[in-house]
Length: 494
Image 1 (cartoon, rainbow, N blue to C red):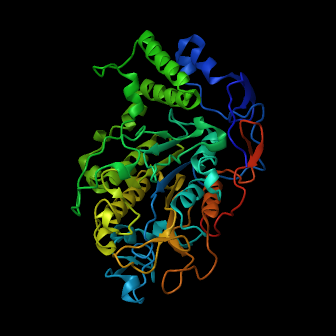
Image 2: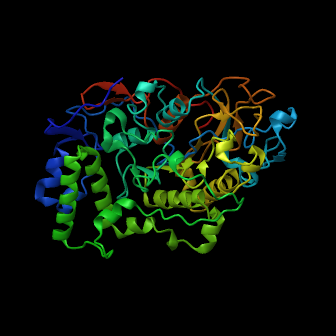
Image 3: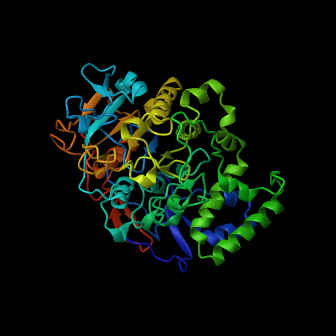
């Protein structure tokens, strides 16, 4: 599989525009130095850096979606207590929760999903999400990239969003791949797995949260917030913008100020050996600074109070609302990152061992920072997109790395379970109002074909118009397919 190479000696490269024509770009260092960061240099898009080779694309795939919102629930969401309840199973499997009717005849969800149950006609729920790993890291990288990996490949494979940005580029003055907030770090120790892999760090997501203050959440004090209805207002304005303001917070509208500030930051990044990653982040931040319309998209205070309440005054509510605002502005791929959290602990990884200090799994799922608030926010997102005429052009994907064990463990939690889980697609050409696949009476194994992270990735690529057989090139000019295995899940897309 292709791997990163040091591009320091690569001084120039032919790169392809979206229309397939070629032009020559200076290296990023030269680009930033030229004209001392003039306005023209600042708005050059991040285009495929292929060392003389453009992506080789088979016959064009018709897109059903213009944008993707990737709802990433890193940690392992329980499928039995959400989309795949088993009311007839023994108590140690079904727990104390009940199932409820949805708007679809004969389809029932767990009582934890009342809002999504009302709009199940918008969803294509996959109950046979399945693969062969119970390991968080291997499963998360597999799910984020669509590529099955070993421990040695945790950082080598590009995220799905990275491939999308590489091939389709930025849009609307926004980076092509945005993570909201992009601070999840599974561990311990913490692993930063939102990466561009062998495409290079410039194709890592633009994380609006920047670097987490405490990347290893397990080193933080244990969560103190244990109320079921915790309310929080999260500041999601890009931290990178702080680099572009003076101590008093005034805008750097004077070009000489902007030049001096960024030049100093660039020099520091160069010394730290992080030039490639830093320059793309600075360019993205500069574009945000120069566009009032883009800056406003990150200001949730612009939204009516009723809308914010509808999404929920929670972290996941604010993140879903920001995703809608970014897509409305033209963002191509937005990942809503909601997993490990220094405030709430290991959100979805609900073993309920003593150190986690979590309530019983059947109570935990009702909390506003767990499934209770998540399903409220996701339902509000889908309805908001629909009301604004954006759902047909926006593929929404709700995904986690695996399900949880059918049997509740002795501590009152559920453990890792790669063999079965649930996820859903909505919008962007999705055939809503269906359930694809099923699990046995204990929700332990699919009763028919299981669909892997590779199949989910293939479905996303097809929806956004990328052929999985497209050949892309790493920084050593070696070809690789967009997706080495996996097929779009039959029936999901119209």
